[in-house]
Image (cartoon, rainbow, N blue to C red; front, top):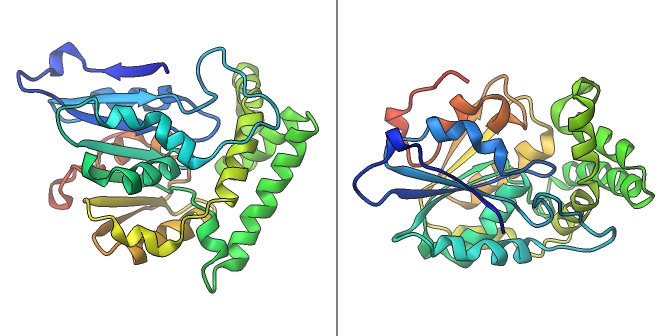
Length: 274
């Protein structure tokens, strides 16, 4: 497992640093958290691991399944690598994995920050949200069909435009397009894992650590609906709604998102320049 560590010399503290473990979204990598190295408070150490299938040079075998539980277990040792509990951050699919880690090892989580964790199966089982759940299932199935047939560029274009808006795929460089397309077999496995997620909604009520749920006003409805559902199940959760920001907010608005991470008290937050 390759892990991206950040602890700029100018920001090191004589005391043992607090670990911030940040999990990336589908189709991305741990490098999406690069900007946060300079945005964290002094004395915090950022670790941004790659999820399964995202190691440099790694190619996910077509048709190979994955589970959220397997992703969580693979990263579990990182929770025990620090002297004390860690600040866990997750974006989208990384947020779904972060939730699984929090459920399995709650005593190792100091704070939990989730930017639109895509536990879509919750929508399918929630009265009144079934149609929203079916909508994302249809999008996911279309992406999966393209990937299964080897039409990786088509799968990637649909994936990127769904999450970032129409035309986002064409705006990417050819190098970036190629990199995302090469990851679509893993993205397909991730969608299948999310749709097959067996975790019932009531289980999230057991989480007691300080939690912040962040959502963008321009994000697709299914992602926003998951945040709203989790907020109802987790009474201690604080919800941050970011106007004018979409699902890719942790990348497009890094400064603003960093200011809302759960280890910042709400009354001390300062929105930084993105």
